[in-house]
Length: 366
Image 1 (tube, one colour):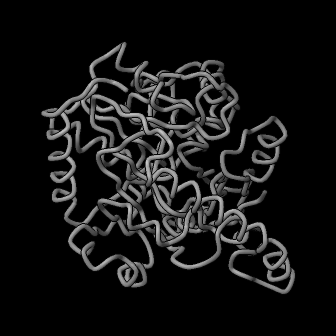
Image 2 (cartoon, rainbow, N blue to C red):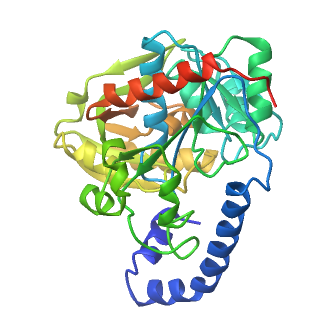
């Protein structure tokens, strides 16, 4: 389902969107009921929760996309690594075709196209991006408790970061960091962007607001104000690939350049805004559904549209999937973004305290 189209339905843009949203509302009501029953079963301990002997920090949200979960996960992983912790990220690996656990070791070099293509299929695009472009150790699997145990059997880990983990309640966590983005009101899926009711934010230990700050602060419990932080995504560089290495380029290359954008993400509006901040001229946009798998016909379309532009700019996870196709030298680049957290050291130290507490009271694997 096209992300731009469904977001138009959620925002009721036009008569057809409002009508379709109305038709979806009974499904949303049923979905809300199912989620509430599931949450109640977990809260009462009627569904078993599995624990690990190492600390688990969940990073997630209440909505579909758009809050910066993966950049936040990478930011926290890098901050904890600076403090001497051995970090591994646990991911479901959205739309992966292999249902077994899959471990991606930290790797900074550009692998062969065939290997990269295989890893995208087995592990998913975001886990591969975190391992290949950011040097993170990533365990991928639907059963993240089992995946974590597989990792612990192979190497020493101090803390697991559970990427997109707020709804993954089968794994006991020591910290729940909840991201709150631009969507602060609306229906549950599929008539709206919410995976859970807004009331579910009460489960969070800490909040990271990345959009609609004033609206969210009015909804956060009164005792949560001191646990609330503000974050924003910023562009930091352009990234390309060359023989056996990644290469960074300055953002100034965007200045007054003619740009073709290629995206396979849920909502590309923020992506366009960061490019336009450099006075770039976006003359063509090619939008695919989130986690799109690129085929030869897509490459042909992109090349055809790129004949009269200076640069093709995409996202880092899309770059990994497009690198197996031939492009003109240094013409296909990805916009690298990073999460910036106001008073981030305070949040990191609070997480570190929980990690150390877990280490001091370590219990056997359940």
